[in-house]
Length: 184
Ligand code: GAR
Image (cartoon, rainbow, N blue to C red; front, side, top):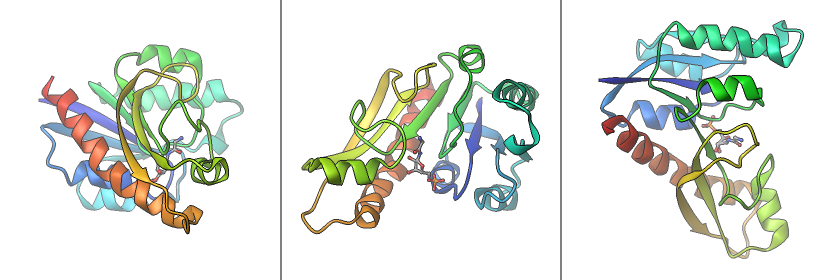
């Protein structure tokens, strides 16, 4: 059975959708760069080893990534799943996991990379928005797209209503992709 590690930074609702999906693989650890990430509580309650690698404790990105790498490698995962992990990773780190590291992003990439994607979609006036699961490469939000899900944008949408509609799709899309990858 293949194994995976999930990286989070906060709420962890995508992590939760993965853990509740009865995937054909074993989640061997949930790692957060923030000690107060709510998702850690949920993972620990399910008996999954949780680890905090607090980015604030490191002098620079390289030192943080080295510590993160060590925490991950002790579990030897087949897949490394970024689920609301909000730190930029160094090129060396990403290369180490190339072909095994994936991310979910709240827009239809290549539209709206980076932060505040729902606000950007509303400002641009697009009729359709959504989410993307993609392989992670050293360029931010630019790796090969695996699968996307779209939602309509309504005339009366706010950032919050649009985010909620997209998040609902994220929770379906990520388990669907990870299941396929775990099945090989
Ligand atoms: C999700 O919408 C995810 O797509 C996004 O952060 C949110 C995390 O929510 N990720 C990014 O923006 C990555 N650049 P969650 O912690 O409840 O899964």
